[in-house]
Amino acid sequence: MTRGVTRRPLLGLLIPAALAVLFIALPLIGLLVHVDWSNLPSQLVSTDVLTALRLSIECSLIAVAIALVIGVPLAYLLARTSLPGRRLIRGLVTLPLVLPPVVGGIALQAALGRTTPIGTVLDHFGIVLPFSTAGAAIAEAFVGFPFLVITVEAGLRQRDDHFEEVAATLGARPWRRFWQVTMPLAAPSIAAGAALCWARALGEFGATITFAGSFPGTTETLPIAAYSSFEGSGQVGEAITLSLLLLAISVLVLVVLRDRWLGALR
Amino acid sequence: MTLHAQVRTRLGSLHLDCDLSVESDVTVAVLGPNGAGKTTLLRIVAGLIPVDEGRVEVDGTVFEDTATRTWLTPEARRVGFVFQNHGLFPHLSVLDNVAFGLRARGVDRATAHARANEWLERVDLTRHVASRPSALSGGESQRAALARVLVTDPEILLLDEPLAAVDATGRLELRRALRRHLATFKGVRLVVTHDPLEAASLAERVVVLEDGRITQEGRFTDVSSRPRSAWIARMAGLNLLRGVVSDGSILVDDGSRLTVATAIEGPVLATIQPRAVALYRQAPDGSPRNVLRCTVAGVDPEGDRWRIRLEGPFPLVAEVTPAAAAELRLAEGGEVFAVVKATEIDVYSV
Image (cartoon, rainbow over all chains, first blue to last red; front, side, top):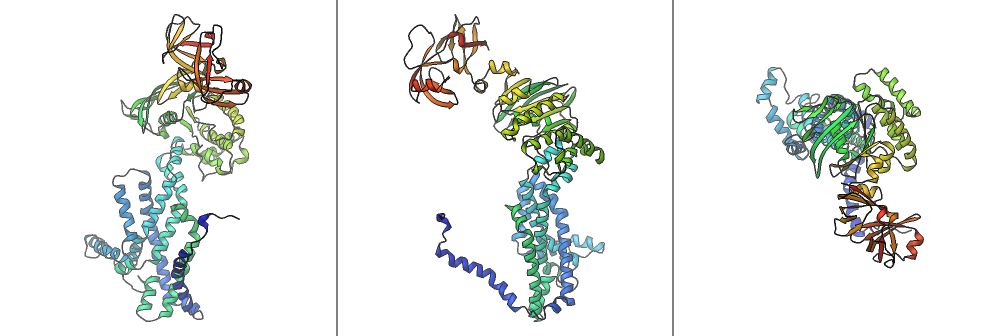
């Protein structure tokens, strides 16, 4: 059996590589070690946990819906047209990915807060975003929607406009082409983008707590609840339970998406 | 029915400048090397790209006219385009693919499916009605693409390299099927190909497009026996010379002179069949008048005829048997004498 020269591992690299694996794995192992397995079932079904879980799912799904409605059209325009200022828009869309979430929250507060022009108008209609469930969803959408736009745009680019041209020569008008050809072909990348966006929204902490605060039942989502019980009430056990729940959801998303979203971004 | 296309357009390094008329009574092949602008021409007719300057018209219906700023969208033109890669929608069944054009034009689902089924029967694909396009072979997918276009009853049928995505074994049969469907189609038929054999077998008339310009058009046999460009001559396997005839001899453009047997005078093209070029080790005795001293530039064994590429006063290809090649000890760089009889040079006016 002959093996390629690059297949033989360099021993000097093995040690830092092993450290890297440990670095990722150790905290997770630590989490699992500290789980109070006997009390886990009762903690999982406690009202606090269930309330936070329900709120998290609610907010993150609304965030995904917002991201889909505004993100897919944007991704389409970025991928298919020579929109002026495309580079700038693309940069802007990527910004929430690198922006500290707290800054995002403060920015949202500055734009949509009650005393701002937009906030005043919304207030007039009885809508208050800061420190509300809707506000939490908007904060999550802000942080999560770049994942959707980037994934969908990459997916659309991978499939150029050939099939849309084919549809046009077969007599299909632009909207029919969009709904019958472009969207179905982009469906896998839309699903992958939505799932990524959802996972990010579900774990969102900084922007949400800054813009929406942490009111149990209204804006206290799972990550915020985990942090509150860890930091404030000293209920480390509950914090660990909540963390375990979030970890389980993340692993699930990863497993479901492993091929899908890697494929779309490749 | 007649398609008129006057087209002047720049696309990257391509400068397409041609004036094409296609009658519906015969199938027309646009033949040319890769990058000549053949596909671009089809895309212009289909309305997938606009021209910089020109006019595309079918029997009074103006598709596009830059002078009057007229433009019909692709969906408004009744053009059936069979793409080189067939372009079957991967997310739809073969039946839904074929029904797509009818549905897009407002035909209800039941009728569209019924007519799609009819066409799938005609192209012998009934067992693949529910299949995804990915399950089809190259030939089957080509036939599905053809059915998808023909079911919409277009006025113009455009085929882009129809046999390119089909493997060699399926090609013969598909070509036969294609010829049958082309024969029954009533409208304008335009086939793009880089393969002279395909052009000859599918079309009655050939338009040669080279580097964005039409260099020759006519019946295939006329075009291939009297080529007007080096590319066609090479495709037809002929040596092509350009020159001027006076007093029974042709002064070739590079300065050499050959005796010819023709009554034509003035600027001409002349072809020489490779098998009419005789090769000798020594300058032959007697009185053959066209003796050219050449060096062998290459030897291409092709079955029982070997093609010998020669560099002399002008490049020349000779065809000899393997036995003759061995006897002449032909090798690259070696010197030979090429002899061509005056009667073997076919001369025609430019």
